[in-house]
Amino acid sequence: MAVKCPHLVPDTSSWSEMRDLLHSPAVLNSSIPLSQLQEIKNQILELIVPPEGIKEIAYLSFAQCTYLLSVYWLEILRVQNSEKPTLQPIFKYLCATWIQHDKSGMWNCIQYVADHIFETLIEILSKMPKNEARDMELEDHIQFLLVNFNHVHNTIRILSDKYLSQLIDKFPHLLWNRCVLWSMLDILHLLSLTLEGDVNEEAAPLVMPGRPDLSIEIMDTMVARENIVKDFESRCQSIIQEAMKWAPRVTCSHLQEYLNQNISSHHTGVALAMECVVHFIGSNTQSASLSASLFSRRPLCVTTDAANFVTKLSLRSRCLGEIESLLKQVGDEKILMGRLIDDLSLACKEKNNEEHKKALWRATALLIFLPGFSRNLLWAVSWSQVQLFTEEVMSTAVDCWLWLLSARPQLELLFLQEMLSSWQCVVDKRLGLFSGQEGSTFPLERCSPCGKEQTSPYVTPHRVWIQLDSDPTRPTALELTLSNVCKQFLSELLESVKYSSDDKVSMMVSLLHRSLPGTVGDIDRHLNRHISTVGIRFRVNVKYYSKPNLVSCQFIGLRYVSAAKRRLDHLIE
Image (cartoon, rainbow, N blue to C red):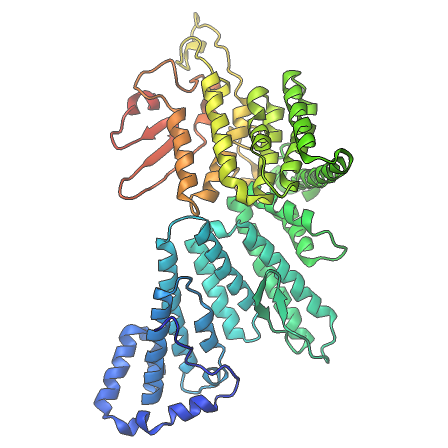
């Protein structure tokens, strides 16, 4: 009944219906004794209003108390029993004209009801299975809050900002979610268009792209419109800055794809994205090892990594153009697909890094350009680094993978299957970090007079695969300025999926299981323990908790903790 019951607020702006209801003889103060009215107010204090809101309750009449309780129970039950709970019903009460103009504090009381409903909604979303369906609901909620962040009433804007912060705190992966970032930039562009119109003409509400049910009313004065745009631009900038701090590569990839798809002479969202990239992308490889004093003395154009961002963006645009041209020439996508796979295999056989880079970028562009899906092409994109295990090939593969995950997020699960399988193939082939051990692993043996020189394994490709900076041992000046940490591909990937998909996290945990020896003291199958590999072995930190059993997997110094706590002594050594 609560789910299908209409809202207790008129659809029109007129409040005559509510006035007739609140002045009905059945709910006047004279119809009940004062003791019973006080009991109802005590019930409201217990259920809805916090102690600091006791002043609002003191001035409420019997009719207002019954209305407040009715709204509370109706909307709480609606959220608890709806298949897709939403915040839109309670915001209809908050936007009602008669509630906002009420002099006895009714709006504050409805706000307390909204707080309870929001907490209930957060609890329901937290208990939902971590899958794509829950992510879509979270995206709908945050889009609704972003729209109401630009409401004509200041109280609604403040409340939307409050709920937006709480929602991101509870589900941090929304910070670098592609839909959230793109929606935010689209809304900013729509708001900027209102600055070009005539304030004397009546303007229609702005409809959000892809969400016809969400619209933004436009302010009447130019000063108010400018303030709205300025406040929302500041909020967008803070969200992007925080996203660049915790998931820099994923966020940059989403922004690159947004720029690639919005080619316009004047697009405010594109301008803000580029501005955030310049200020928050971090330092380049040459400036990463500088001290804080040297870093601050050099201009931003010298230290920033924005040039790398633009280079990858131009590569994406150019490869898509090449694929479109090749499809027109060949005429058959299957023939072109086979040709690109053959070019990729030939480049690996000839050990030509430059040709491999061209072939892999084109293969990724074809996989993105085609509306369908090819398993063979996905396999080629995910496995090329196994055939040619070099630093250049691994760097190209990581860039192409990030592009694929941003442009085709529906292929993320299939890509993870292939990528983790290629990791297992590298383990089986004993390449890089998993190469065979030669000689003793004692780090001080080399310092002894009779110590033998140990052969350092070629682990640079694994450093790129696991860790995205070129040298993991040196601190970056950016950590001292923006408190930004250098992220790793696998670690950042897990940071993105651990909040959204249990299946994907299980796949990552399975990777750790297969990467570590199965028995204590096994010298045939374990990571190489040469002193040069320590920097990589200490970088990944993964914690995964599942119910009812607790699984804690740590890849810190090759330490893996299980329920039986096996292999600790051998792995910590």
